Image (tube, rainbow, N blue to C red):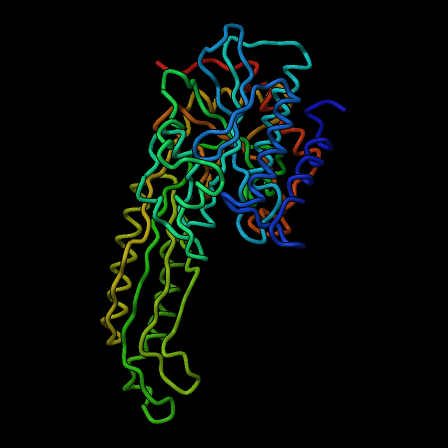
Length: 411
């Protein structure tokens, strides 16, 4: 069984999945005992693969395999080791174990490349504990916001205090930042988290861009009243208005290639069976792989929502909760991934990523690229998340080809 064996990769995925805070459910959050155990396990695999291992100031675990000349610039590979609550076991983890397998295979062959290879197991990408995503990769990119240190988890523990309890020094976070001259590029293998590759019958795909996202909260205000005494024609029902607005979100995004719109949460108040809702709050998530499309659709949607409100005699207030730009993968690196797939006898289609990834945080540091691996029915962030051994091995072999034939694209 070689390091790139799909069965070996899935065995390691299972070993990581066994490290959880909740029996029967995979939950592994940043700066917890489970984080420590997962990092230690991954560090051991990195050492077995011939890497020197270190932990940086935010808890990322990093393995380095030197190139032909020591202390030279590195190609970074990796993904994240944290999870959402009740997670699937491949999200993030497949990228980490595949990258380690690539280095293990280089080491088995006794090969050194013209550059170093570093594998990073990012400590926090999901943001589940402190509601601040991409902590690990932002620190490496040098864009970590110190204000996040005051964020608190559900138990009231600040990020700064949790870091100290973990054995880290918040004041040392700037030391995690890498210099651009020391990083050639970042490449991340990840499950697709969507159904496109499965629909195309392809095990891998080359990512074109990571979608930009706008998240908004909409508050609709009408008039609460007695459910039995207010005639239908005289009602200012906030929930009925919000229902029409939810459909407007769907209609605004429908038929637009590479644009999606979602209402993920809605709350009606006062929330009594016999009271007409007087106030409703719901969320909107708009994503597209180009910012002009997202901005145009956001403006069109807001215009529709205000028109619905006026017609129904209610008012609305909107608040932008999050706004991140789309991130394009480097065309030359995309071409190198496509060539690597072709060398493995695979036709890797191009597709965007609707989900965020560590790669998007690393763009200020270096050119980035991503390879997607097919997952069953596109299910992710769910215990039903599933990848076959054959697809895992296909992804690892393409990643290996990419690394061994990598050409620097920096100016």
